[in-house]
Image (cartoon, rainbow, N blue to C red):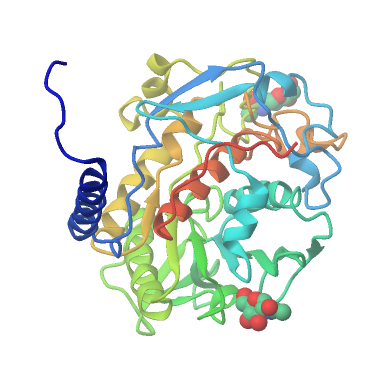
Length: 393
Ligand SMILES: *[C@@H]1O[C@H](CO)[C@@H](O)[C@H](O)[C@H]1NC(C)=O
Ligand SMILES: *[C@@H]1O[C@H](CO)[C@@H](O)[C@H](O)[C@H]1NC(C)=O
């Protein structure tokens, strides 16, 4: 406190300017601006916390992109308010909720594509309904082999879904056998997405739910072909899955070099007391506890919902060494036994005919959190920090 600066103030001022410039140059050299910043924390590990003040949902049953069976508000599913009060809290940071207007600013003149099965369609519908908050003039869009999608004229943004449940091309083939086989060409993409090269700026892939004997019974199995010839010895279904993922990943890397590429892992099912065709049920009013997850999903317990983790392991191995970023949406979704459409399917006989739906998700609901995570990852991959939460509604 005692020592007094003897420098005249003008000298001090000049010195301050010089040192500031020097520091700025030093730090800009230290932190190269070209390398993309990584997502600052692992968004996939955390817990669900109930927050009655959570500003969700931001869309309702009137969104024109809903699929009837997932439109849980319209179908008057019990508990929707509670379902949407749970907030995913990563261990080491906050997960901001997407700001549709801000995201549309970033996405202007861009196109986002989903390729895979109905769980990716569930993801798409959530994203469409969220983005529509920023542009209510959104119109249905279906081209380039897309199953469905939307165009947002205000921002010139297109978001679409290409249905390709195995990703690879497959077809019924009579063969010489009585029952025939489903021929899968592991190195040829399904025609639904073979023509999208260069069209999308961001692509999100998945597959997994169709790789089971309920979809392809042993009497009419999958038969795997590579280079037009049967693979020998014939792989079983899960070996075939891994071969397909490897081949599709190689194709994706070659065909879409400039596209931001994501692969979202399995969406877990929650059939309790039996599988989907054995009266399995999911009438839960809160998420599972951390301590319950292994019992439901660890393959060593052989429960009806074990396949998500089994398939994830195969997919992660098959994607190693690629530039396709894995979105591990499985763990956070494993908790949410409470958030499926269950018996509220919007049709009188649906449950009697099909059983409960403990596989897809209510909208609004858990896929909105998948969208929050996708938003953060897109931001970081584009080299832009995620802004603070600004709630649109
Ligand atoms: C809209 O975006 C596409 C790319 O997604 C671009 O080719 C096209 O020129 C854009 N149209 C306008 C009117 O800016
Ligand atoms: C499912 O429930 C119905 C009606 O209660 C019953 O008739 C049927 O046998 C059950 N199916 C199985 C596989 O348990």
